[in-house]
Length: 196
Length: 264
Image (cartoon, rainbow over all chains, first blue to last red; front, side, top):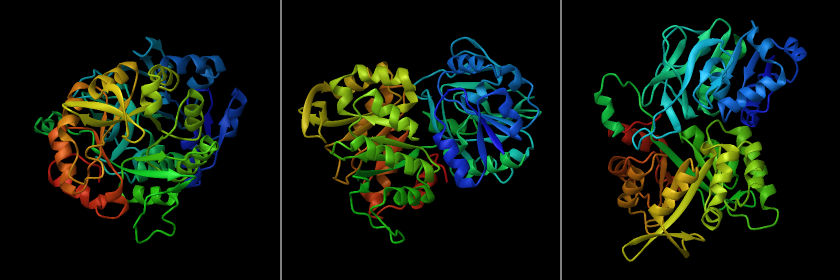
């Protein structure tokens, strides 16, 4: 069963609706004890990364999250929290990935937020992207991106610069796009995660 | 211009241009006639939305024209039903006047809200919404009509002119925190003669946030033209999709054959 870590950063109605459509059982994690009940975890998140980190710290769950050894998926800002630092609010984050979250430079050609469907390309083999063709489109809405890193980038995408659409290290995964809004392939990804 | 970026070997992908069907909803039912052969209930916005998502629509806009005191409740119910069933993003608009409306719709699963008259009457509402929910949640819908040689913002479906010039209002909305502009030309709306490419290009070149073109779509070529001539991010239409005059898979195939990036 999948546990969704609750810390007050953003609405999760669409995420839980997608899990229900796919028949993926889930529950909520509010306390340290709740982690025991689940065999995988999702860290959701929308909004401001610094504010989200502040809320996460207030839950007291940070040491437990850093020590997790079951599959853990951060979505959007939930993924950015896994990195060491964000330019958004000049914030120190969880540091599970020793890479940074930076701001896109805006222009009339590359508008910010990066909003819409963009292609993603696997940099490594991983069951999270089973049955999803290279170059598939996923739905993004974000102004900050995780830098491309040869060691940690699982999927790359390109906007005004190349960035990490997905990162992977041991049991930790992150996706910048919203799988719950990314059509059939987004649903495939959530199903794949439920089987990791 | 991003569509020339494909010549650069370093850039291997681009953001897709979005195709957005718009559904008018009243008291929880779609109001414009719809002509899909395989629909059980053409008045059910959720079934219609599901059908469009299956066809390859990139996003949906619901415009709620319910005029009763129960309005917020019916909108929230609609948004919840859509969010439960649909796996693409959607925007809801119509009569959103305050933070509490937006908050209820966000919690019901809406990806974005669209604000029109309320923002013109109280521009500070844009700042409040962007601060509370993030710019990506706030779409400013602008209905424009030309008066003399000026483009003027109109309210009440294009019937009521305001004092505001269109570009100047859009730039103010952007500076206050709008995340996207939905620009409808009332001069073109319903004509099926194509989008207002002149104004759309001026607006799109002036802002750093996404622009959705609306008003005037009557043929596949109009979508090719609006993307090629203005480079807007998305194009919205209602009747050509509802009456089956343009099928989204056919439209996207033509766009792709014109080297316009689309999600297929």
